[in-house]
Length: 111
Image (cartoon, rainbow, N blue to C red):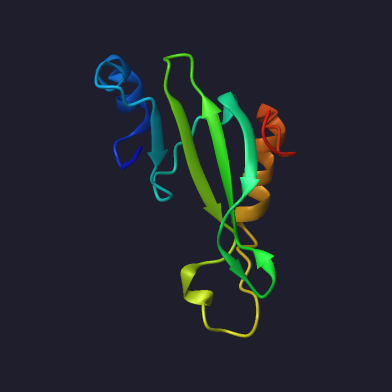
Protein backbone atom coordinates (compact mmCIF):
# COMPACT_ATOMS: atom_id res chain seq x y z
CA UNK A 1 0.00 0.00 0.00
CA UNK A 2 1.24 3.46 -0.85
CA UNK A 3 0.01 6.97 -0.18
CA UNK A 4 -1.67 8.59 -3.14
CA UNK A 5 -1.90 12.35 -3.59
CA UNK A 6 -4.06 12.19 -6.70
CA UNK A 7 -7.69 13.35 -6.50
CA UNK A 8 -10.06 10.62 -5.36
CA UNK A 9 -12.07 10.82 -8.60
CA UNK A 10 -8.94 10.23 -10.66
CA UNK A 11 -7.97 7.22 -8.54
CA UNK A 12 -11.45 5.71 -8.94
CA UNK A 13 -11.41 6.42 -12.68
CA UNK A 14 -8.13 4.48 -12.96
CA UNK A 15 -9.11 1.68 -10.57
CA UNK A 16 -8.72 -1.00 -13.23
CA UNK A 17 -5.04 -0.08 -13.62
CA UNK A 18 -4.35 -0.20 -9.87
CA UNK A 19 -6.12 -3.54 -9.64
CA UNK A 20 -4.22 -4.89 -12.67
CA UNK A 21 -0.91 -4.45 -10.86
CA UNK A 22 -2.29 -5.87 -7.61
CA UNK A 23 -2.71 -2.62 -5.70
CA UNK A 24 -6.02 -2.95 -3.87
CA UNK A 25 -5.47 -0.60 -0.91
CA UNK A 26 -4.90 3.13 -1.33
CA UNK A 27 -3.86 5.43 1.50
CA UNK A 28 -5.27 8.90 0.83
CA UNK A 29 -3.14 11.90 1.75
CA UNK A 30 -4.48 13.66 4.85
CA UNK A 31 -4.36 17.00 3.01
CA UNK A 32 -6.40 15.72 0.08
CA UNK A 33 -9.77 16.90 1.37
CA UNK A 34 -11.94 14.46 -0.59
CA UNK A 35 -12.67 11.08 0.98
CA UNK A 36 -15.17 8.28 0.23
CA UNK A 37 -17.22 8.77 3.41
CA UNK A 38 -20.28 7.11 1.91
CA UNK A 39 -18.38 3.81 1.66
CA UNK A 40 -16.75 3.98 5.10
CA UNK A 41 -16.89 0.57 6.79
CA UNK A 42 -15.13 1.25 10.07
CA UNK A 43 -12.64 3.40 11.94
CA UNK A 44 -10.00 2.85 14.59
CA UNK A 45 -7.98 5.01 16.95
CA UNK A 46 -4.68 5.88 15.34
CA UNK A 47 -1.21 5.14 16.56
CA UNK A 48 -0.32 8.68 17.56
CA UNK A 49 -0.73 9.44 21.24
CA UNK A 50 -0.03 12.53 23.29
CA UNK A 51 -0.88 13.31 26.89
CA UNK A 52 -2.51 9.88 27.26
CA UNK A 53 -5.01 10.07 24.37
CA UNK A 54 -5.00 8.93 20.75
CA UNK A 55 -4.56 12.03 18.62
CA UNK A 56 -5.66 10.59 15.29
CA UNK A 57 -8.37 8.36 13.85
CA UNK A 58 -8.12 6.01 10.85
CA UNK A 59 -11.09 5.54 8.53
CA UNK A 60 -11.52 2.60 6.15
CA UNK A 61 -13.75 2.34 3.08
CA UNK A 62 -14.47 -0.36 0.49
CA UNK A 63 -15.39 1.28 -2.80
CA UNK A 64 -17.52 -0.44 -5.48
CA UNK A 65 -14.66 0.07 -7.98
CA UNK A 66 -12.82 -2.72 -6.12
CA UNK A 67 -10.34 -0.54 -4.24
CA UNK A 68 -10.13 -0.12 -0.48
CA UNK A 69 -9.24 3.30 0.88
CA UNK A 70 -7.89 4.48 4.19
CA UNK A 71 -7.23 7.95 5.51
CA UNK A 72 -6.62 9.56 8.84
CA UNK A 73 -7.84 12.59 10.70
CA UNK A 74 -5.57 14.28 13.24
CA UNK A 75 -7.45 15.82 16.15
CA UNK A 76 -4.41 18.02 16.87
CA UNK A 77 -1.92 19.70 14.52
CA UNK A 78 1.62 18.33 14.54
CA UNK A 79 2.74 21.67 16.00
CA UNK A 80 1.15 20.61 19.31
CA UNK A 81 3.97 18.11 19.90
CA UNK A 82 6.16 19.03 22.83
CA UNK A 83 3.55 21.22 24.50
CA UNK A 84 2.01 20.40 27.84
CA UNK A 85 -1.53 21.12 26.73
CA UNK A 86 -3.94 20.01 24.00
CA UNK A 87 -4.52 21.96 20.81
CA UNK A 88 -7.67 20.18 19.63
CA UNK A 89 -8.91 21.06 16.14
CA UNK A 90 -12.22 22.49 17.37
CA UNK A 91 -13.49 23.12 13.83
CA UNK A 92 -12.31 19.90 12.22
CA UNK A 93 -13.63 17.44 14.82
CA UNK A 94 -17.32 18.35 14.44
CA UNK A 95 -16.97 18.43 10.64
CA UNK A 96 -15.48 14.94 10.67
CA UNK A 97 -18.21 13.72 13.03
CA UNK A 98 -20.91 15.03 10.68
CA UNK A 99 -19.41 13.07 7.78
CA UNK A 100 -19.37 9.92 9.90
CA UNK A 101 -22.97 10.33 11.10
CA UNK A 102 -24.40 11.23 7.68
CA UNK A 103 -22.80 8.30 5.93
CA UNK A 104 -23.16 5.73 8.70
CA UNK A 105 -19.54 4.78 9.26
CA UNK A 106 -19.18 2.12 11.95
CA UNK A 107 -16.78 3.69 14.40
CA UNK A 108 -17.08 0.92 16.93
CA UNK A 109 -14.16 -0.86 15.29
CA UNK A 110 -13.79 -3.32 12.45
CA UNK A 111 -16.90 -4.68 10.71
